[in-house]
Image (tube, rainbow, N blue to C red; front, top):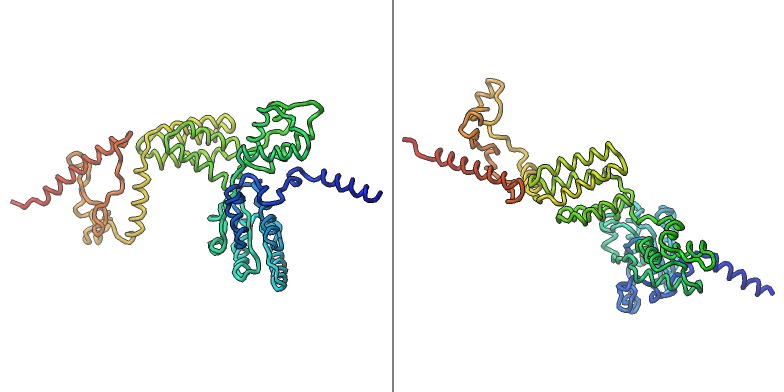
Length: 443
């Protein structure tokens, strides 16, 4: 009888566990969504086959199997598995883990140390892993959702291989749903359209799709099937995965900027709306549009900067959601404007020249001479007031004498800059004529 009670209790405990936990893969071959890592010819499968496992950084979005794969690696290579989280652990915790790993090493067993959210450790804490990685005390497997190039020490990255985990696509999410249905012994009570909607709500997160499915089963009455509207009411639509301070934030603003630069207003609007939908600060978007107007349109259409600034101010005045339309309008204008980075390139070139020649004095003839001493030193001598010359253009040199003339701004034959190029060419012609006149021998 006690065995019966124990069996019933075990079954109840099993059902009480979250579905995502119950469906954790038992081997690498069961892992879905990462064929480049865990497939037959995957990187990790090859490592296990050759018996050589080194330290690694698992980089990828939430719900892609980073923790699960680390556990499976330890099991399939007969390594002791230790797991810590950088959120809850400090230096004292690391020391305890390292001491335990050294004790195991002395008895002939190596430790796989899995560090979740490893990017949360500061630089000094990250450096503490270096000695135990180098002497083989631990094989480090760190997991991060953030770009390791920005968040991890170069010394740590040089000792670990970065493996990228990909978001689940619709095919791998369907595999997970079918496994869930087999485990539950019932079909998910949703229409085909609602099932497709579930994939979008999961946003590439395997854990999320299973959690959403579990919510549906809990809520469904007998013989009830949810359509899209009922499903959205039930699960209250999961927000897109988007951390405003981290990679999701930078990826979307990068996509928006490149779509605008590429003169694609439709793609630009799509990324703009994704950022609105994810809760990005619209004033941040407004500031970025101002930057795009300066960097990618510039003087090809000077109105772009005016409109971007006006849209930012309009949002500041109207707030959300009314002000979002002004930002969308500016986004379309900038995307459809003629493109030129000539002003941006000129600025960067001039900044380099300023840094390299920052100690040179301007030529004396363009400096003011407020005292007799300065007049005696030649300050202001020979300066020509442009408005008193023909064409209001004297053609004098204004660069420091040791530098000579330099050209930073080279407008293309596009948009308004076509007119600017005509002006510059005209002034170059006048300047050349003046120099030719100065070089003529006196009568």
